[in-house]
Image 1 (tube, rainbow, N blue to C red):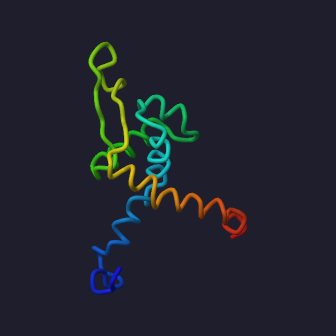
Image 2: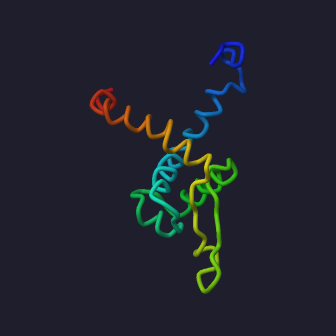
Length: 117
């Protein structure tokens, strides 16, 4: 990326915009979990150790607002909020499968050094 497009320390820098996507600890975890496919919130809570329903709700709201996740409500008896299905948007998939996946690989490769720090 050319320097003129993103001067160092500028508030609206592209790096800052991308870093904000991982600034909340649970957002990348939720994105990674949704890589497996459309999921209900209750199943995310059950499948993500250590995350409360409140934390997951807040994370999903941030990801929805940023356009990384979409919510749909199927018809029928599960049509309420508990039945809402969350899935990655095309933008969410590109982030989760690209930079987020690379970050996870880097963290796995350097786990020992990160833990020893």
